[in-house]
Length: 332
Length: 77
Image 1 (cartoon, rainbow over the protein chains, first blue to last red):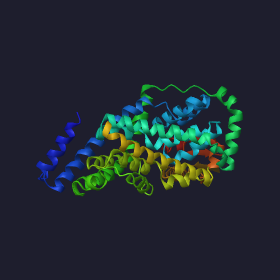
Image 2 (cartoon, rainbow over the protein chains, first blue to last red; image 1 turned 120 degrees about the vertical axis):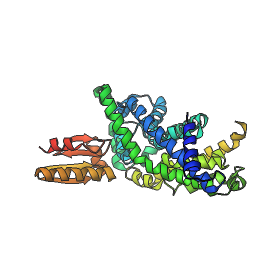
Image 3 (cartoon, chains in turn red, cyan; image 1 turned 120 degrees about the horizontal axis):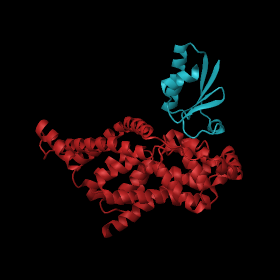
Image 4 (cartoon, rainbow over the protein chains, first blue to last red; image 1 turned 30 degrees about the vertical axis):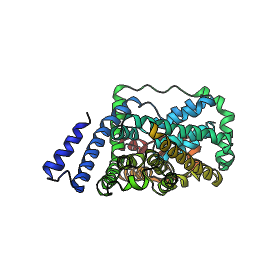
């Protein structure tokens, strides 16, 4: 089904623009046209379909649900909801406080917040379109594992000690009141098909309006890598998955800040160019999830110590993921 | 005069929301004082989790998005 985009790109690049498939420029343009048209089409149709299904899901519903859940399953549910619940990254602090003041343990809140940027419907669509089902499933599994284990770890070391004092007070108060809260929560409201359509339409336009430029930038970078980095350069220098290349990729990813939409097309061309899967994953997850702007926001609710722990946790997790994947890829 | 607070951590949507309210208030000749509340503690005190949110005279009227023009007109009547 996705072949039509290859044909379209070939037609435009080779027939209309008259470029030769053997030149670097032709190769890069073909890659760019194919990926951009494919991603745009996937985004518009699929965001609409997904939005139809999850129209009644919002952070308030998720909070009420998580507040009632047993701690054991809470990390898993927190991470799952983080993957499917839409919210603007500028809402992460209010969400953090909303969860906290409902008495939800810090670890479960963090499972939600760590997973959220790593996995979302746009990222999943792009991964399926560009890298296939297998890789997508693997990516989701790992993204959720980082969220779940990260949350568990933070609760194990009693990380709530290092919240800013007003947030810690809100958590303590919330846990005392959580019994009353669960009694008063109402059922999620039912939506008519028309309301769902309205929501899905707004959502498609909104998300597309936000991410289209990221797609152009991401695919543009990918195309440049694809056409202009000499064939075999990456393969030759980093292709063996040298142990140091993984932490190096993670460190390189920190100052680079992008959302998943922008980084996935880059990911594709890195892999096509022979960068080992583990190194690529480590680089991309670090770019998406460990960023300075996000951490500066979190400073409002966390003390430096907790921020440092969280940062270290993410970096170590991504490095381990990279090593594991590089080690096991030959056996897959 | 209506005291209007736009709750949000200062992202583009919150700024647009505040501008929209000011513009419509001007058009309707309603006197308002709009200001942007960015403190997480204050946002939490209204129980808001999705920003931008709008508080008029200490009543929460909207959360989670830039409001529609028609909604803003209703609030200002």
